Length: 121
Ligand SMILES: [Zn+2]
Image (cartoon, rainbow, N blue to C red; front, side, top):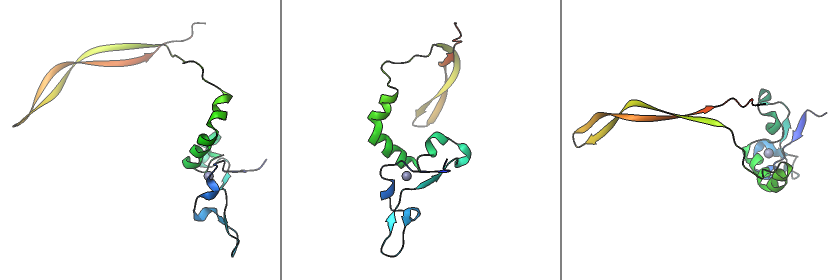
C-alpha cells in the first residue's frame, strides 16, 4: 500500500502555489498535492490523509455532498436525554450613569445541562 494519497480536492490542481508546480521549461503544470499518510502525527488521519487543506476538503464536500449524505442519511432527529438544572445565585450587575457606574446585587439564575445515565438495558 502506498504511503501517499493524491489530494481529493476537485480544484487542488488549479491553485497557484509553488508547491504545485511541476515540469520543466515550457512544460510546467500545477499538479494535485501528494499527501504523505499520517502527517500531523496522526491527527484526524481519516480526513487529512485525503485532503491537503480545508479549502480542498470543502470543495470536495460541496461537489459530492449529495452522494456523501446518501451513504448515511439522517431522516429523523436524534435525541440525548439530559437533565436541566437551574440554580439561583447572588451576582452583581453594573448600572452606568453619567458619573460612572454603580455595582448592584441581584439574584441570577445559572442553567446547567447534565448528562444522565443511559444504561437502561
Ligand atoms: Zn488539495
